[in-house]
Amino acid sequence: MQNIVIETQHLCKKFGQITALDDINIQIHQGEFVAIMGASGSGKTTLMNILTGLDTATAGNVILDGVDAAQLDEVGRQRFRAEKIGLVFQQFHLIPYLTALENVMLAQHYHSITDEQAAKAVLEQVGLAHRIHHRPNQLSGGEQQRVCIARALVNQPPVIFADEPTGNLDEKNEQLVLELLKDLNQQGRTIVMVTHNPELSQLTDRTIFLQHGKFLRETRNEI
Ligand SMILES: Nc1ncnc2c1ncn2[C@@H]1O[C@H](COP(=O)(O)OP(=O)(O)OP(=O)(O)O)[C@@H](O)[C@H]1O
Ligand SMILES: [Mg+2]
Image (tube, rainbow, N blue to C red; front, top):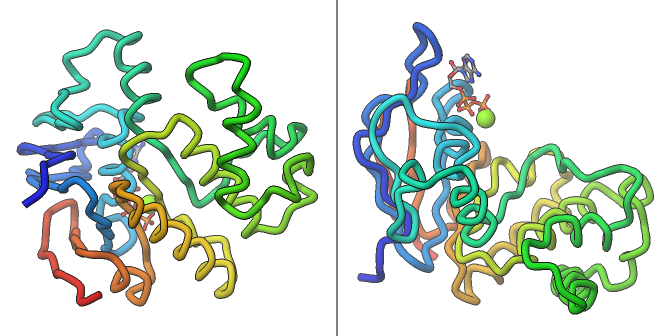
């Protein structure tokens, strides 16, 4: 078995009286493509937010690439996130007045004179070499999501987290984005993706189901 890249230990999250996550213990291995499914409100986004350091747990630990980010100071945590994690969201969160290239460059952690080349290279990788000077409103939804994937890739993180990355896309673009994620996975990246679509989840290695904030079950997918 490959190394464990992400591990949660007795992870709990409460929002006041609401228990959003209840004793979640999962392990994700290097190079795995894992889908997270569950009904609305089952805790998927809360889990993603804690795994990626956007939010903190009420109890329990998250260990990502051997590091418990809760033990780092703010500067260390930011650096850790920039190096280790790429994020893709359902709502693309692109800056509207910046071009595709500028949006990607904004996410770069290490600034150097090679910035622009590196940003161009990831845009090329997602098939957008011909669109780098377009602003988000000049791009289709699928193209915007590919800019987001390029942005997530630009620091070459080992893990990519995607929360319903195809939730705002039509079927054709959904397929394109999924194929792109699969390519990235085949190149060795670990990917964790929340999805509502059972067909998409079946194209991953493993699906983890949450229910009312609890781990319900998991399935290994035949691919
Ligand atoms: N900031 C918050 N404050 C209070 N309650 C919250 C907050 N964020 C989430 N919750 C609650 O925690 C539970 C889990 O929410 P979460 O957003 O993780 O669900 P989800 O599985 O991502 O749902 P969806 O499929 O609709 O995106 C829900 O009951 C939600 O109302
Ligand atoms: Mg959600």
